Length: 143
Image (cartoon, rainbow, N blue to C red; front, side, top):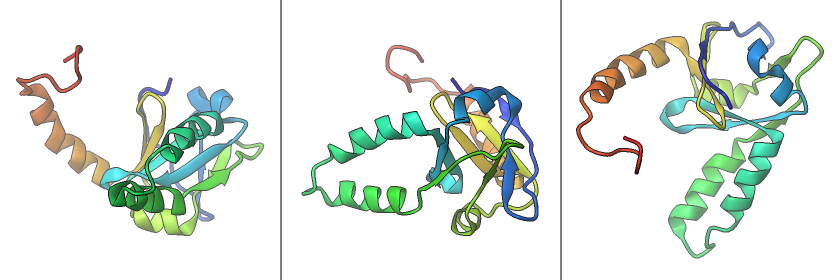
C-alpha cells in the first residue's frame, strides 16, 4: 500500500528517483499515465494489469467509457526503474501535469500520484477545509 508524501526532484533528463519506501513494490515495473486534476498516476505493473482488466469490461457502446479509456490509456507508459531506482517520465506526461523540477509524490493506496509541487500545495489548501467540514458520508460505511 502506498501512503505518505515525498518531495523528490525531477532531473534534467525527466527522471524521478522513486521514494525508498516504494522501491521494492515497483522494482518489476510501473505504468505512468494521466491522472485526474492534472497529476500523473503511477501503478505497479501488477496493479495496472488488474485495473486494465476492469477497464476492458466497460461496454464499447458507452461513449463515456470509450472517452475515458482513450484518455487514460493513450497516455500510459510502461517504465522499468534503473539501478539507481529512477523512472523516466515521458515528455508528454510531464507537459500534461506541468511537471518542473520540484515534485510532490503522494501515496494514494493502490497508486502513487505525481504532482507539480505548487499545484499540489494549492490543491491541498483548497481541499483541507472541505475535508475538515465534511458533514455527509463520502466513503460508504467509513466516513
